Length: 123
Image 1 (cartoon, rainbow, N blue to C red):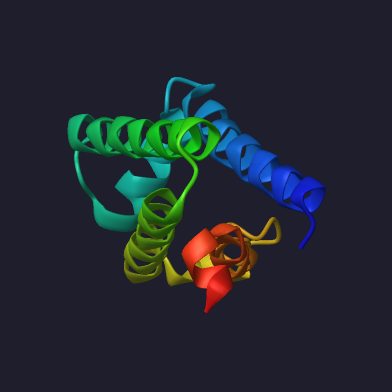
Image 2: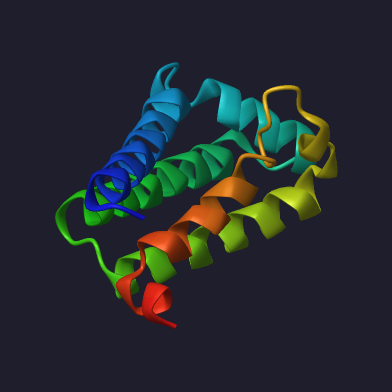
């Protein structure tokens, strides 16, 4: 992949993670809290904490991809995507059928991350 395409792919991931933070917090986390409460019956305080923790994780990954791209960052991002996908699948497997691709979009992200990883691309 050319350097320009790699830069575009990296920028798209930064926007994806940044946009996820904005989408998660634009309503004060209410949509995420509601989703977690319906799926698990947990209290609003715990649900809010999880929404904020997830948003902080997404912000950190977006910043790392922007400022410190490299093998460790891409592998950390992939581990987070896998972990969150497994957790979401356990809590709400119906998210796989979401018309906006709530979990399906994770598959191309997981395919893209190794292409950006300089160590993986040498293998």
